[in-house]
Length: 217
Ligand SMILES: *Cc1c(COP(=O)(O)O)cnc(C)c1O
Image (tube, rainbow, N blue to C red; front, side):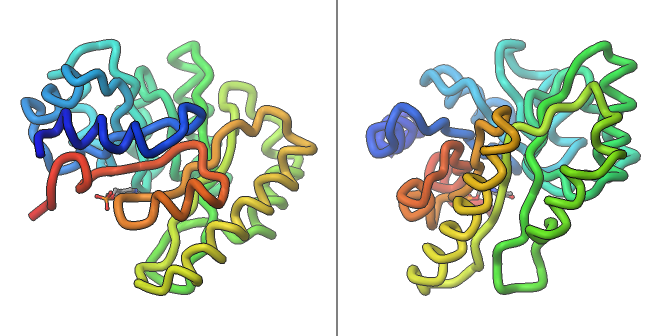
């Protein structure tokens, strides 16, 4: 199937209240352009350098999301244009994003990345760490960032029950926080292998790469 067919198939499977982030990492700009021409306007990258390059090469109405681990010293490279950072996992990073956002005279939307997998290879905050960050005095000082939800990745496993349970724990935490933080609008969960489970468990933002662009090398 073509990229356009893949996008249309996924869009037909997800409800209109779920946004699709096309994860274009490792694919060259001319392939990304195919997806853009098929109507896709939100793209996700996991590396700063690659994100900057594609931002420069591709149409300016694309909404770019950073979905991978972000080092503080690289924030300034994307601060002028990034639409949403999914992978905030420390106060220090949030402070740096705020500082760069002030220089760019804008507010940068962020998600807190929550550790839900039973693996030790994934980045993220525990539920307790996320709550401590949100209720802390340091966070309240940051006027140029806005935390608009959570992101999580399930374990890399074929055990669907486990994946469902992990996404469900994230959704329960999200709903709990939403009571105090009405600006929480996005729950970013689900990739090619598990987005159908994620949507059943409340995802509003799915990050899909290989099911659109094909398998990466
Ligand atoms: C690569 C990546 C995805 C997309 O993975 P696919 O399996 O290709 O859909 C989603 N989220 C993050 C954080 C990624 O790094």
